[in-house]
Image (cartoon, rainbow, N blue to C red; front, top):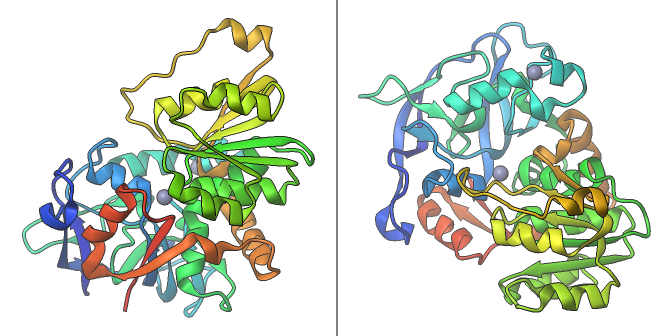
Length: 376
Ligand SMILES: [Zn+2]
Ligand SMILES: [Zn+2]
C-alpha cells in the first residue's frame, strides 16, 4: 500500500531544521505484515531526543530511514500467526523489540534483548529485512523497529503493547518512551525507597517523567536541575520540591548544603557528560547515580575510581527504564487513569506532520517537554 511517511536521508544537517529540512514527507510503499507482525494505523507519535540524535548525527543510523518511535495507533491488519492482538486493538509501540527467547529476555530483561538490539542497529525489523521502500530505493530503514512518523507502520507483535481504549492516542504515545524510561529508571533501575532524597538533572520528557516516578516512589525531596530555568515551573508542578541551575559553578556545594552530603539517588537524563558529572557529585556517599542519557558514543565520563569503593558508590545505566513493557505500560496507564500520574502536563503541544522539522527545532531549543505529531 502507498503511505505518507517522514524520511531522513542525510544526518548532521545544520539547524534550524525549519530551513535545512532534514525530514521530508514522502509517499512510500509499505508491504503487508509478515508472520508475527501487524499493520498499525498510526494516530500519534511523539518527538523524542533519540530521533533528534539521529537527525543531528550524534547517534548515527543507516540511511535512508523513517524516524519516529514514541508511537500509538490502532491495529488494522494481522499477519500470520498473530494470536495476542485483534483488529481494532489500541497499541503503544516500544522502541526495542524483544524476541522472548534470548538469555536477557529469559531473565526478564527485554530491554537488553540481543536480537532486538541487533535489528535496531541495522534499522531492520525483528523478523529481518524492511517493509518500506521508495520508488527509487529498495532499502528504507525503520527506526527502532517502529518508523512511526508515518500514516501506517508494519511492526512486530514484540514491538507493541495493548492499551485501554479510553485514553487518547496523543497521551498514551508518551508512555512508550518518555514515561517508561523516566519512571522506570526510578522504580525499576534505581528502586528508590520511600523517604529517600532524589535529584533529577535534565528536564526534558524523560527527566520530568523521572520526577513523576520519584513522587510515586515517595521520595521526601525531589530536586530538579537544568541549565534552562524556564523548565523549573513545570518541574515544580509535577512534584519537584527544589530547583537548581546545573550550570552554576556552585551547584554542587549549594545542593549539598540543601540536602546534607548530597542525595540518595541522582538521575542524569540529559545525555551529556557535564550533567553526568554533576549527577555523580551531588550523590551522597553510599548513594546511587543512574543515567538514562544517550550521549555521543565518543564522549567519556571520568571519575576518581577510589570513590566507588571508599564511598561505596553505585553507578547504574537504565535503558527503557529497565521496564517489562507488557507489565509496566498498562500499570502506568492505570495510575494515570487514577489521577496519580499527570501525564497531560508533559504534552506541551500537538503538531501536524507537515510541521515536523519546526517541531525538532523546538525540541532542540528545549522549548518543549513533549510535542506529539497527530496523524490525520
Ligand atoms: Zn524516545
Ligand atoms: Zn530477546
